[in-house]
Length: 191
Image (cartoon, rainbow, N blue to C red):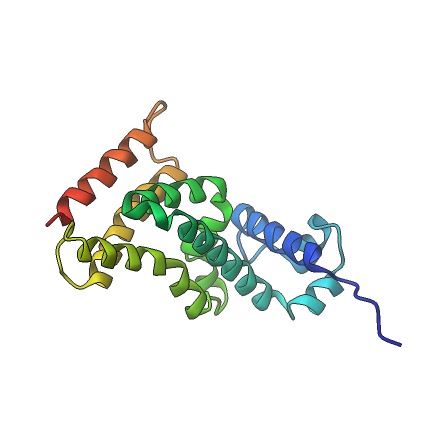
């Protein structure tokens, strides 16, 4: 007789979400598997069964973030470079703990934990494809598409990171600043 499934995809997703929140709030060194299990209303055996251990759980949380981010970028790809830029900020504001987990570097300092290269690269593929499409249409310069994509990513990433870090005065119009930056980036690469 087959063993019943004890830990399903819902438990897995809860664990990933809780891990991102706890690590964001407490830092990776202070978060224990017991903390994660308790916050997800499950057991540490669920973590070991689904992920293996803490390093694997942290890697899975980062990968899950990149997958979710990549899906949002893929959905926005039909709207070109400006659509991708808007979707970048929207996703980050909706998932601030995941964003910081993915890009904050706290995990790398704690354990040998980095995203799976294929997962991280796939999340940025819509941006490279949009650059190539804009080049083909003659709207932007014909420089190396990956260089343009990285330059654009750096611009939007920097602004979103500042906004999430709350590096501002009250009343800062982040949406307006971000929109102006997207327009400036588009002008900078225009043909």
